Picture 1 (tube, rainbow, N blue to C red):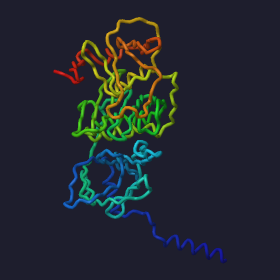
Picture 2: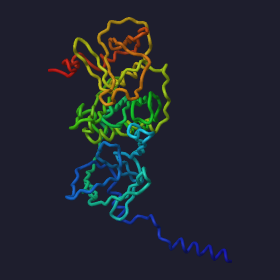
Picture 3: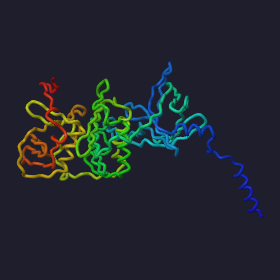
Picture 4: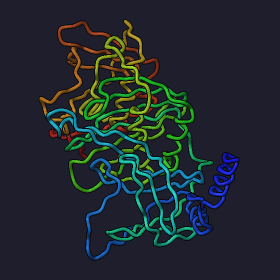
Length: 406
């Protein structure tokens, strides 16, 4: 009898206890209005400035954007990070770990709460205005405005592969290159300030490739400019090469995150992809001579065709997969390259090779490497990289300082 009484008391307590997480009708309506994609639409600063930051990214400033989903998940385009300083030389051993861009959100009254993965806290965003097309947050510094965006991807091109390279900066910006293909192949090179250094391969599911590709399709890759540049100096340049039907469809270079926000956002998950997948390190015998990817050029008769860093990495990967051969060919170009001393001072630890290249000759398909103290050899990449992707009109005459002339 006593146990039966306790059972009924327990049922009574459960029935009378209010549901703590049950949203109100107003909160449901706010969440429904939030669902969708939001891009920045300006910031109105208060007269009195107060230092305020809720999301510590790497040093570079990136505008925020949001995608709110019905399941209580939000995609913050800027992403979340954790910084680790390893060793005695704190600055030169600084590394960033990408924690992803998706997290949880909920509505409390007339405010938005977002869960921060880097410190496991909920951060409060006061909603100043929310309409069909406008979202505004009231912060300590001012009002952050956003507008709803709708992307129509039906006619946007798809790609066979995407190659992204980051140049580094006057600081600790990661220097790396990543190549992904539509069938899930990944090639990664971590050069400096990355959490994995060296050459690696991996695979990703088709769904991840599609998500990364769609990020770029939202940036209207087929119509935007090929080059963006911010004012100032010492910033990183990110180059992205898109392949379609087996050849370069377009290369877009962005210095200082000056491009459209969708382009800037699309670069983030791809540049940090290597941190979330299983990497297999390539052994020395699996690599061709290490050609620097930053300043790779085809040269002929006082003119050069300078490849972007991503195009250079693409060519290096073709050389990696090529076959050594004894076939003779008529050289058309010299291939020149140099160290990335623009950002990395001489003497700092570099990814090195035992072989020193004196020169490289090519007709676009066959590449002969002339080495100091060793026999030369030729690699056949199986097709003509130059003729497929470039023409003589792409060459530029340089002055004695290496600058293009009219």
